[in-house]
Amino acid sequence: MSPLSLVFAVCAFASGFGMRIIDPLILPIAGQFGVTPATAALLTTAYALPYALGQPFLGPLGDRFGKARCMQVCVTAMALMLILGSVAPNFVLLLLTRLLAGVFAGGIIPLVLAGLGDAYDLQERQVVVGRMLVVIISGQMLGSALAGLASDAFGWRAALGMAAAVALAASAMTMVALARGAGARGAGPAQTLSFVALYAEVFRNPKAAWLYGAVVCEGALVFCLFPYMGQLLAERGGSSVDAATSQAGLVLGAFGIGGILYGLAVRRIVAALGVRRMCTLGSMAVAGVYALLLVLPLWWCHALAMVVCGAGYYMLHNSLQIEATELAPAARGSAVALFACGFFVGIGLGPALFGALMHGAGFTGALLGVALGLLLLGQVVVRRIVDPTPLR
Image 1 (spheres, one colour):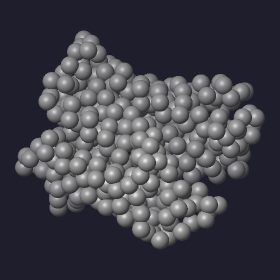
Image 2 (tube, rainbow, N blue to C red; image 1 turned 60 degrees about the vertical axis):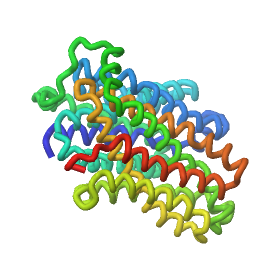
Image 3 (cartoon, one colour; image 1 turned 180 degrees about the vertical axis):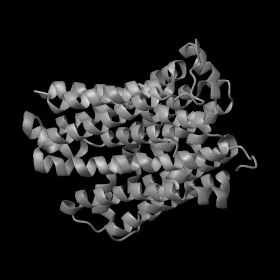
Image 4 (cartoon, rainbow, N blue to C red; image 1 turned 90 degrees about the vertical axis):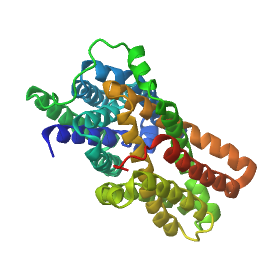
């Protein structure tokens, strides 16, 4: 791994680690500040929304001033917000620190992906980005797990302090790499181009509208079920209401394991299938799992199925990420940032749309509708977005 790739990996890990750090801390934070768990859960929303909405602004800044430099600013600011959150004297200030942490964290992953696009040619990029997904997912899973342990042992403030330490380490590594000139290769800024000019460059590519529409649909279709997994297990998976919550966490965690398995095997998968068939099989795998969840009898069967679902999802999503890095090489940070924004918008819309569909058609109609949507999405990706070049 090159010094630049190592810096990208550490920053990506820090972003993933800080993203899920608050999830296990909702109850102790609610008790600390005398608010309801529902109110404390706003900390998640306060992080996610600015995470998505800040990306279209931070991406062009990376194109103009250098991706590694902007990444270092973002990860340092995120660390500062985590530190301030760990000493926040009231809930309002804690909420404000999470909001600002989300703004800065939202700039890290798109800049990492755009930086990898600058540093690696298309032949190697699919593998490198796939492996970077392992780093990001590992950070998310480890952050959530260690936050719960740290909170039990030392209190919830210690968990935020731990995330801040990880972000500070990433900031220090990035600073050292920049001092040694590691960010110079292929990561030059786009000089004087304005935000409008950068995005005009992106949409000059006719695939842009298809790609951004596809990633919004992907985020909505794949993640729409996640908030309802406990209810699905209680109604269809043979779980008691009391056990369904903890079992749902394990089932959803299995999705991340599938992503890690894909990242570890990405070179062999691409070599064996090619990207076009990989997209088709990935969308079919997710669609098949969502239909199968309706008839699986036990929660651990759901967990095993979600491993397959996670691997299939990342086969599709990784391919879309690569296309985003190739839309506009002169405005790569802007292209990837808008891609990430669309993805998180889809994630935000998905549960609401699924809830409305479930209200009218029940779990059976809703999940079968999502499965059909995923199959159609796979065909759109193959026919309109992924090029039939020899690489594929």
